[in-house]
Length: 363
Image 1 (cartoon, rainbow, N blue to C red):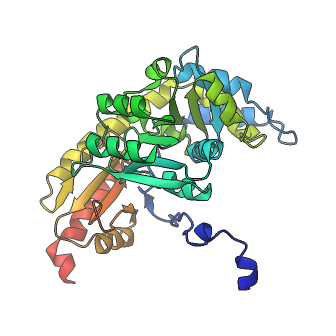
Image 2: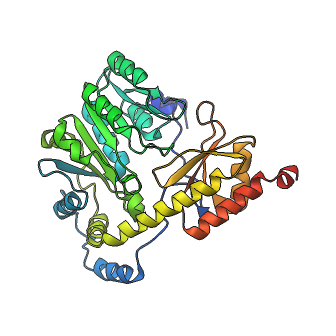
Image 3: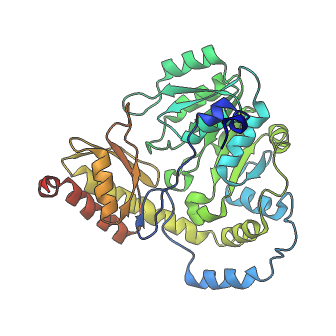
């Protein structure tokens, strides 16, 4: 490709690396915080029968009105608040950024945190301010106050629980951040099924607060469906940058069908929480591993002596794919594992013990 053509691409885009998704074929996939359970077989058959009635030759309902109603009920959105649907939470983050983007405006969040906040800031020509978390990955309110005062962010994103650390920030600290916010404050509750605490009821208390959810961690990651909840006036403005028909007919049908039988999702979340706690205990007993508390469906851990990338590669060679978080700074020597089915978790523990064993290291 000639440099003459590439010069038309914005410099900040050329400097970025594309978001990489590793090939998981043939591996136990514990890298992407997915629910490992599918639809129960009876529901699977009923869902497949209903697919024949979906008119894939027609554009979808542009407002996904039936799905709106379903999600409003299932997610217990306050009556005086509205929702907006996105092609995953990532599209909602992008729509929010596009809605407020202007010269010298910034997005503020916390580091380590969800990478898409900073990437989308750059996509939309905004500055990203990452406020460092404390050593225990809690919010350092003194640093937060100073950053908000200095940068006057148009958007503040607070992940609750945080990704990739898995911990819940102090609710009172988050409320103070919401009150301090000069612009919009977004509480990202992607892992709500495992945290069992929410700022959704507080939407009625703060006009500047938006709560973001997703069905991905509930067990529907393949649908790519995110939900933004907030004051009707704000939601109406953000809706103006939504591309037409962004929620396709298959997603609308499937989400409505599954959420009408949401009890089994609740049961799956209960199993994952129990398995997470068991996995935390097992990993905490390993002398070479420092495990961080988690209220999500994944666990961040640090290797005390071993090389994280070498251990990641050994796990992959043993058929286990997790996430390599190792980088200079607070995530040095860190890896992240998603909670899988009990047998997958047992295989992960066995592979991790094998990767950390002196005998294997000497080979």
